[in-house]
Length: 611
Image (tube, rainbow, N blue to C red):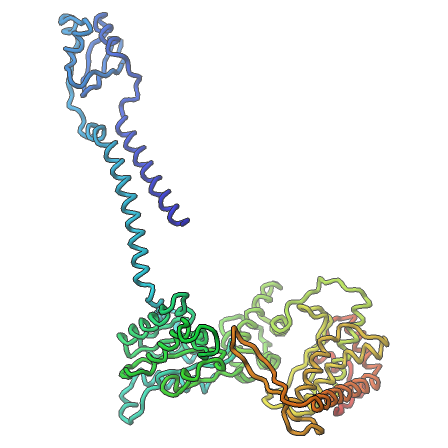
């Protein structure tokens, strides 16, 4: 509506300016003060008029002193007849030079037609605008079932497989699809058929959309992309109509590729929600299933789709013949993280001593998007500190900013609270250094970040896919190290260990109920976890064991917690001087890097033990 009123206002302003121009042109030359015709007759009788110029009904009278006056006469009668009526004799009139000029055609037409023409133009303009709006609404109604399908045309920012670091297996799978599109005859000669659908699965930020862009850059065939959410409308049948339009467009351009991003928006399992078979989303999914593998199979269109929730997709969508090929994109390992960091840091000025391998070591669990954000944050920190080269320390600070949030150095805390935090974090760090199966400490800090008052950063030396029972017990002991340090040093405890206790309790319960690592309970799992898709997504746990077993589980969980706590208490008590040294260093410097921390505890001959 605001756009409608703006257009109306613009039309009115234009017409108003046009009227001003016409009015000024029409009244040009008539700016002199007009006098009555009787006054002109009196001047003629007095012998003061030398000449009169007649232009239509306008009179330009020149007096003997050179002055000009203007007047108007009747259009129907001549000037001489009019002056005779005012008592001017022929002798008096004969002394005046009378010149009759042709009336300007422009002024005549403007004076005659301007009022009518302007009104007509205004009416025609309003009707034209209203008809245009109505025609636009009618066209929108007829194209409501058309899909907003966007072909890939941005070749200035073309992405190829060479621009995608890591993901070697995924690129290999997709390169076969690209090869079929470029040279299908080579595959057809041996009897191979092209996969009808390729599903990219993986956690957010692992590069699903980036790989789709790389396929678009490599395939050199028409590539259409659309979001799955664009299919769904509140009107039943619109989504199915748009699906038909998408596939018809792709078939006309075959061989071609369709990329549907976030397909879980329409591909959820049917029959799990409200609406039944008449639900708009389910009708849209049904149409996708038919288009991908229905009676009409003579198509040369490949459907690519991306999702990070493959577990909620309908089984009919995942069966062979529809999405034949599933490409899983995992989080990058250390070598892939290093390659991704080099890719994003390619055009950025780096310091000479930069070591991206160490940065990759500190970022286990980071996705490709996280690493891109990390490099960008390091560049921003460089500018913030007035430097022209990105140094190693800016990468390290960016890691902590991405993981924990920005530093809150302006947060005021008392000396007592700072001392408590220092001993708490020193307890975590010292227990981690005193256990064989714990990950090494990379940094200890009492500087607040996000919602935490301090933190101990411990990271594995290499990527781990499997974890042992000893490693889990070491993690529990490290989590309880802060709580134990508060108890030993201050003979009191604070709320700072609340999150640590939660982590320790959940880890201990998983050892018993999920991983079968309890000697008493044996290699069994307890509790059946299932995901329910009803009015959203819910995770429920079914209790498939008796109350007696539940009591035994609780006892085993407590046993793991007590065992880890005793280990943490033993280390902190045995190396109390080291605990004091680390805590005082944190109070003084606020942050200890890995080398600084291990240099402090080295002189105390700390011998790592097992839980």
